[in-house]
Length: 366
Ligand SMILES: Cc1cc2nc3c(=O)[nH]c(=O)nc-3n(C[C@H](O)[C@H](O)[C@H](O)COP(=O)(O)OP(=O)(O)OC[C@H]3O[C@@H](n4cnc5c(N)ncnc54)[C@H](O)[C@@H]3O)c2cc1C
Image (cartoon, rainbow, N blue to C red; front, side, top):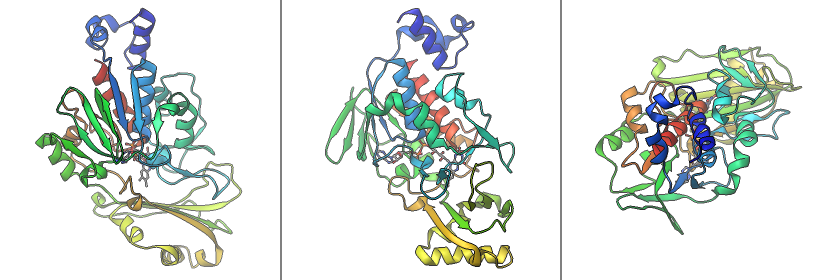
């Protein structure tokens, strides 16, 4: 590795250049023992895409296997319902805006955001988390992503890791598991040998909340900022009606419903007109019977019903020790990169998925 690559590597891994000689993570040994094999990444959500982007920058050979026919996982949007992208999953930027530059490893990244009613969170302006990944991350990794590849098995006992789908077996030197935790919890991917008992325990004991969002268009803005519910106990989840057009250049009146955990199950168990009427009845109760006469249209996103997601996300109240076990790599071959596979210091979010990918890449190449 030449000095330019060396400095680039330190930059990607967030190691300050002046301090690099003194930091074991960027010592000479670190450079000479860097990984030189092939990686397969399972899942093209924010975690998988972030891992791919970093490997691409490092010049590591990799391939991404994605079960669905699109990238993004739980950052999916709907671009036809309104005059701004509707975030069907992740909507808020739940940290400092500078994290966007960190994810791309480029200080020139400049994305327009607005503060929200939920200060200090931010929202993208007429844009989304998906737009961000499509603009800055996807272009350099798109040709390495294979779609409609549902991974069902990982064999990691031999020198090579074997990754199985219905029709193919792929070989690599390391695998990055970047699928939702519920996919592992429900046993949709088998591991040979079986995962260490601490890891199996962490996967099985994790509480994964149900997840649901709805967006309802009305003729007028009778609801103001919306309405937040005080869920007790708070470990049960969250529920919030909010003005989805806040900070957007929009001519529409759209109320969002975000709900996660037990309160979400009131909606995930309903469908079609019954679900619409349930929401309108609730809103009529909250807003003086103004919802039904003002109703125009709606869309819903039930994350529990998504075949390759199967739930909302790991409870915000998960034990941090359990979360740390979820994130640990195995035998320097099986790495975990995604929202729940973190150091347990923050709740599951897009920026945590990206940080988890960075940690996994760092562990792989060091
Ligand atoms: C309702 C809701 C609201 C949210 N709001 C926010 C928010 O406002 N802000 C925020 O930061 N975060 C939010 N989140 C959380 C955020 O969306 C997730 O933390 C983030 O998407 C996790 O990224 P990931 O890459 O780990 O997983 P995902 O985004 O779930 O991506 C996983 C990918 O793996 C693929 N996959 C699954 N199984 C297989 C298989 N067997 N083989 C191959 N591929 C497979 C899936 O198709 C998917 O593309 C929200 C989530 C929900 C559900």
